[in-house]
Length: 225
Image (cartoon, rainbow, N blue to C red; front, side):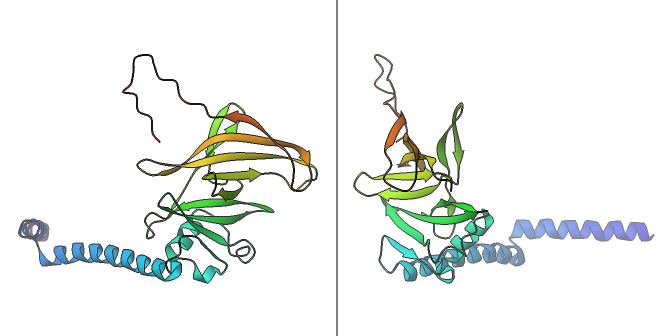
């Protein structure tokens, strides 16, 4: 008897739930609207926060971790970036390149560190960016390319790696920002310097991107920019 009653009650619950789905239950609709509202509210809050921080500036720096956009700070922590102890001397740099917002953030890696880049096209969802780099048998990708600098005259980024030894060999990758369906860094040149101490060392190009050959008679070949 009890088994039959439980079965009957369960059947009624399933029928009721199915009816709610067909009729557009206010409870289910409210939950759906609540999720959507929360998402919209979070994006609006992120835009308000960004507007107050940037204050009309395209390029600026932040030296205080308390002033970082909340979603950027969250993305940095989720990616394992330890920035809090160094931000006072190595600020987070915000830049607008070719109409796209970027954040360059120094992250401590044990005794050394590296800059990381975050795409801020959507300030409510910052995305860490990867960099191609030269390896022993080809190319790989990394989110810690070294110390990143921006050359406004050439429109290129440079990422330099070295050790704390003196003298030491330095490696430098030169990138341009490629804009297709999403932001990405495209390596255009790799340079190396001989063993030296300090700045002022000479750089030698060991690899440089060449224009891709187009097959004869083919004018319809399109490559990503």
